[in-house]
Length: 165
Image (cartoon, rainbow, N blue to C red; front, side, top):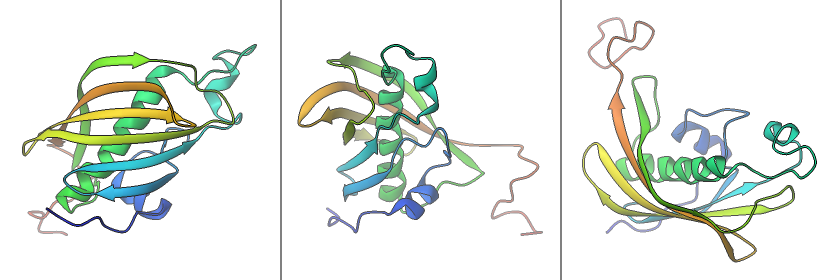
């Protein structure tokens, strides 16, 4: 079993994930134990673009974005476990979401703590258990399946076999 590694800062998170503003939903990693689990944070602020329409009279973070934040934490964990970074030649897709439950709304000012554990993995398909909490209370949980896919036919992506590298 690999030892717990140093936690990635925001610059390293950006190397593990292709997401950028306004869709990057991980602000910080608190714990990272490759092959096992990650604990990450999302600071929920009133400035998030979705709050203008969800809902104007009572801002609530959409549940699907809470699940997406879990998936992004799973992406950081996966890439760290594989010892590689995100690149233009591959993408980590959702393959399934099971047993998703939402316990209470997430609102501006909350700090969303995301714990994601690896349940099972193969070369291309990974299964995770994700739990999101605010102040120690579970706000959402789900099992996530993600698949690593190589992107074929990318004219703008140079691979290791490209002689013009």
